[in-house]
Length: 262
Image 1 (cartoon, rainbow, N blue to C red):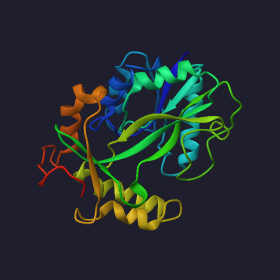
Image 2: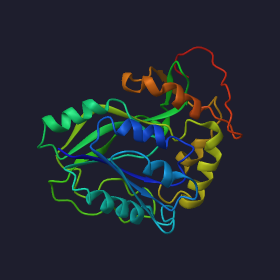
Image 3: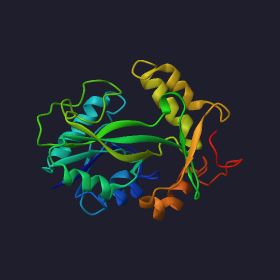
């Protein structure tokens, strides 16, 4: 088996990129990174990792047409001749990568594997808090798929095109493994990320109410506490530190009143 992780990145050098690549190398055979014309040190960071190949685009295309950008990333990944592809973002971490790999090897006839996407809203050294209201509920997404099947292209959409090519979701099975998305965990990052989505999307591809809920105040947001997965405990301090970084590059502390659901 040749499991290749496929990532599309832009200006990720000071976020979770290095931690993500270290994590992926623990259970993937190769990493293919498509750099969407980053203007920071993303290319250099990614290029410094073993078994990691990076292709840098001449100009950024993701927010112009995500489908086209992801298709280019897919084509770059397929040049590695993988038997399986894990489509993952640079701020996501598989709860149990070795278990996912074991399942893929054990069940070669399964065409794709669904992972449970969990949106980490807060993180500290003790626990994670996953958002569970509205469209933020944990949900399964086909992220790992076999190249032995017939498949097409990434959906031709400006945004919300998905990560897997058409046809790759047949014979899908639930892996029972979660993928933790830290993209919204840093409160100081949320406004800039919200502004990008609000301008690029404007409710055309994602529900407007869901976009607006990004900036809800804490009293409206519902989260559920969960422990750090065993496979991520050696990185929890670094992940929590990045999640709690303020706009000046320091850290901020959140007020907590116990560890039950909110």
